[in-house]
Image (tube, rainbow, N blue to C red; front, side, top):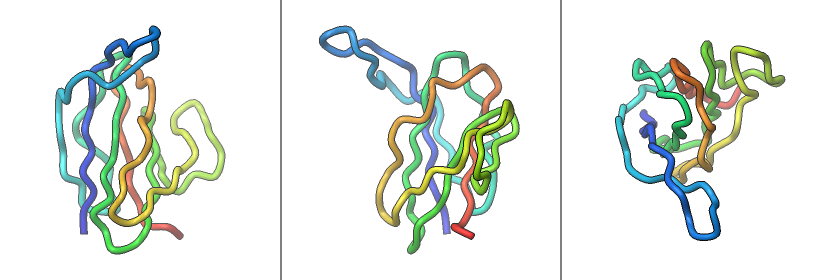
Length: 104
C-alpha cells in the first residue's frame, strides 16, 4: 500500500503560465506517512495513488492529510482517487513535506 510523491521544479508554459519542469526527487510513501524529502522554495509536488482506495494528501511544514481546515502548518486534505494522481500541489515553501493518509 503506497503512494508516490514527486517534487517538481517549476517551469514556464506557453502564455506565461506555470508548469512542472522536471522531477527533482521522488519518494514512495507507505500510507499513512509523511515524506522525508523536503521541498525547495517554489517547487510543486504531485502524488500518484497506487492504493486500492482513495487517499488524502496535504502539504506544509507539518502536513496532516486528514486536516479539515488549512492552518499555517498544513493545507486541508485533498482527495486522490485510487489509481489517479493529484493536481499539482503548491507552490511549496522551503522545507515543506507531503502527507498521505487513508480517508477517515
